[in-house]
Image (cartoon, rainbow, N blue to C red; front, side):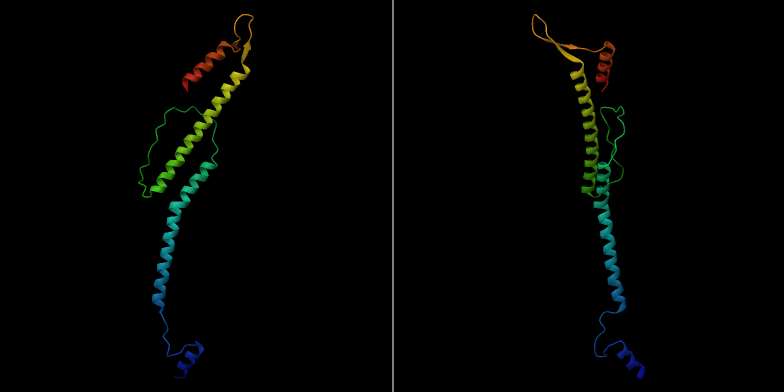
Length: 153
């Protein structure tokens, strides 16, 4: 009896008060909260981290030297079904942005070639009779090569 009284004094517990929830119910509550946190983290990874990582990779993408690409490109859909419509649309947006960047790069290169020809190889020739005319100062082989290149693109 003396040991029992010492237990209550040492642990500062009154025998008239309830101890509240027992250890089993506390353990079950903690497990539920941990499972909820795990599902939240998985959801964040699926819907936020992966699309953000893909966007960052696109942002820091270093484009290699231009290779000859076909004018029409077939876009293949993945076989995996995507449950989240936001995730699917964000992946499509990333693919479209990659295509847009490639087209912009091609346009810049074409503009640069056009400006090189226009400003360095074409000059105005003024004649004594009639209107001034433009003269292309380019070798015939260079002209034919440019013509073929434009036809093939």
